[in-house]
Image 1 (cartoon, rainbow, N blue to C red):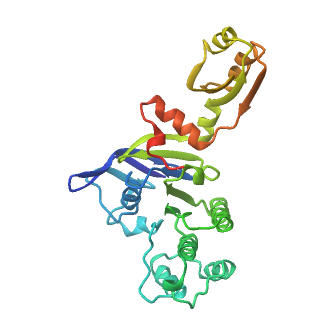
Image 2: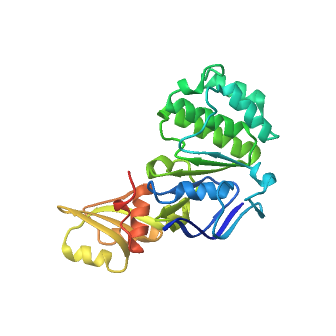
Length: 301
């Protein structure tokens, strides 16, 4: 487990990470969401031990990270703009990471680069952005590291490659307990892979919740009432977070269990009623507006 407690980091007068407390548990994919400049990359570099915190603590499997090579071998960081040695090939980078990670799987690396059609003899400088991302994911997967920290890793990958990368992560989670931490500014990108999501804004955490729990506790309904009186009766005892109206069609985001919300609306015999699936973006819009933030101002769809 990765445990962050009251973590702070500044660069000059800029507070990049502000009192962050998070727990990243085993057996789940943790999504870290926020716009560019929200502090995601700085937070990941603190967890990997590239940077040291000014205050607070970072523990990986109950051990501090900074200046601790034993713990760092458990972590592989894929930055948004990965660095490769000038003039290097995939084979050269493979040998470099083999010297750092004792459990590096060279046989699997050869198999995956062949499967992803990456020429290990070709200079990486001639690779496309997407190919470089694929290479870093393969290096991370084959490193044997338990924690794979990904900064905008899916940016630049086509849909087929995205699915391939997600499948690799899922396989290693099952086979050897890999814990992926995926930072992105795009909520839609994380929706079908993450179990737990933290929302970072201006260096601080607005929300950190299990995605399944959030979905169970929020309902989105569309309804057409027979009268205004029915609408008032149906909504008077509900915890309504958002309400929209288009003509006679009302759309509500309601906090509560589905059976309770559904029975409440159906009790007035509406002309039309439907429970809709909430997207991750809609969930965060609802949750953050409750605490006084308008997520639509700073999260990119």
